[in-house]
Image (tube, rainbow, N blue to C red; front, side, top):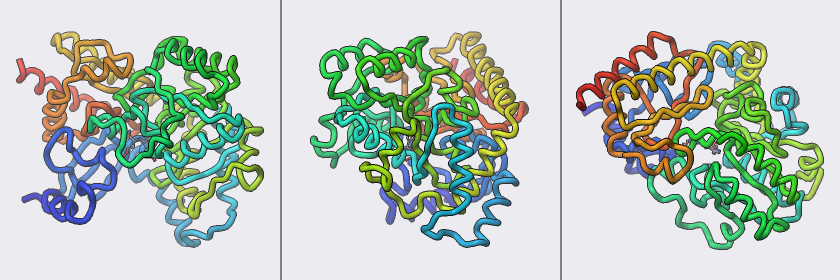
Length: 427
Ligand code: KE4
């Protein structure tokens, strides 16, 4: 028995499903989750000292690779000054100034402790600012696990085939309207029917929780226009795309400005940090200034701020990182596409910047319905094969691959070799 198997046996006795987040459970691909002991650069090392090239990167935060020296040094220094004060600190001011300088639409920002908390708070601020109650979200998009957003959700909810959740009262979701991602006409019909009641449209500017589905040309611009026409707010959930597609996230990459933005993952450098922010007049509604209440014991925690500041500072001071990362991604996913075409595989390769997804379907994947045509059993076989080759992919067809600056060309060549071997043995 491996140490991971032994640990998993113990874990399932005391933690639901043996994991602290469902997507880590390997349920959709089978087998035992690997228990990770440490990580360095682009590699994970499990409790049995197996090494894996990591394409999860903690689900996005590790854009610079694991255990980046400059980040660890700041965190250790912060720890030596004390772990948490529950009081204002200079680091929070530095962080807020840095985030507002990087995210084009952000005039004010509030730190929280997760992407879920950021989205929950941004939606409340939108409702408080507009005095309206309804929101529009997109099928297959995932915005964390707050009650009102667990409607037709992506990520783990989609993986488990339960896009809604038990325990969420009807009252919490009656004001959540669903539309198909990349289908502006669905959004328009919601607005035509009850536009005066709609507080906000919340969207992942790249849908990265049903695999990776980029916005169709004009989709984001169309949402901006509809929100302006009907007086609703546009919320970009950039928990994944923020500081990834560009220093200014998807809003810089695609040139569409939201009213509010939610952030997570990269902003924390691997520590639990979320944030929401945007137009000053909206954020000034937030307590203690305004009547929209939101709070958090560990919000702006000094150790977490140290990690986030270190990572974001590196990204801001080296803008060529994005050029390097996105060029590497174009090469990597381009070669995957060539392989699929050359071998005549029933697969699709979707990409947005350094995010990518290999879908096991012959249909182009442009929205939730086409994503759902994927053969999840075929994906499971592939994922387990790659794991055996020392390549750690997200254990779900409906998650993204996250490239980092630490992935070398040699590592990526190894991935192709393993892919080729897998597919050749299938013919
Ligand atoms: P967290 O509460 O997990 O920090 O963030 C929620 C969230 C919000 N918005 C978007 C666009 C997200 O992708 C997420 C979380 N992403 C998943 C991965 N697809 C986190 C992995 C997990 O649930 O363990």
